[in-house]
Amino acid sequence: MRILVTGQRGFVGQHLKDRMKARFPQSEILSSSPDIRDAEAVDTAIAACKPDHCIHLAAISSIGDARQDPNHAWQVNLHGTLHVARSMQRHAPEGTVLFASTAEAYGSTFQRGLPVTENAPLAPGNTYAATKAAADLALGAMAKEGLNVIRMRPFNHTGPGQSVDFVVPAFASQIAHIAKGLQPPEIHVGNLDAQRDFLDVRDVCDAYLDVLMTAPSLERGTILNLCSGQTRSIRSILDDLIAISGIKADIIIDPTRLRPSDTPIARGDATLARSTLGWAPRIPWLQTLDDIYRDSLQQATANGLSL
Image 1 (cartoon, rainbow, N blue to C red):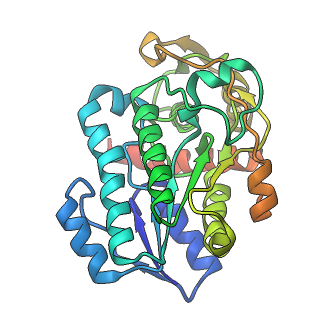
Image 2: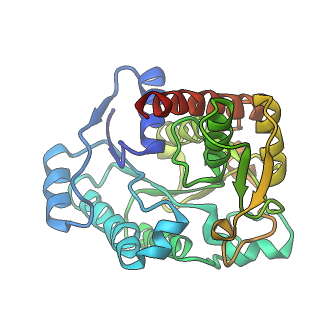
């Protein structure tokens, strides 16, 4: 397989390349596409390489970044996605486009208190979620016009190498710096009561690769939730990381880390992914946290040496 991965230098992209090399050593990962906001450049690149598949990861993925610069988020997450999809339909119509959407798009639908399935309405509550939901819906319409697209809606996923803009590495980084004596024993946090369904990024990458193997049997426009079916409070994740590290620290609520529209509980149903792909999360959660903490310790050590 010749696979184009947009956003391959990002957090998920790096893990996806590792998993792809391990599972499909004969596959070719094509050079990343140009700035996806440039429709002409994207079209030229895809016309030249004509990939068998395209895994579209490139996005503004931070809720905070999207809120601070919404125009940029819309240009990348919606218009950039359309540039990639249209070029694939034009130059590689038999190829599969796997779109990394997000469960954030369900938004206020989570307030019903039930695990959401793929049929649940999209009701995004922030700019990031809105841009991804718009792209998700647009690709669904293009599927009716012949685009071979599969839409994945993963829930929160984390792992080593993720930016501290996200909650788990943000905790791990602070704890690692405390363990190394690089900051006072205080951990600054936002809302600890929110409950989320967390996955290891490597399990998510395996699901993406499972789709490529199953794509011929999937209906165009298929939507697949990716989740464990188990919610965890943000507080419990902090407690687990503190236990792994063995440190003692004061917990400080930081108003700047509180989101204006935080969903209390986000529950999902991944029955369809299990039945169609045979996929299920395999990496134990405590292993995920341990891997993140070890990575944070390495980063903290490097920061300490550079002081």
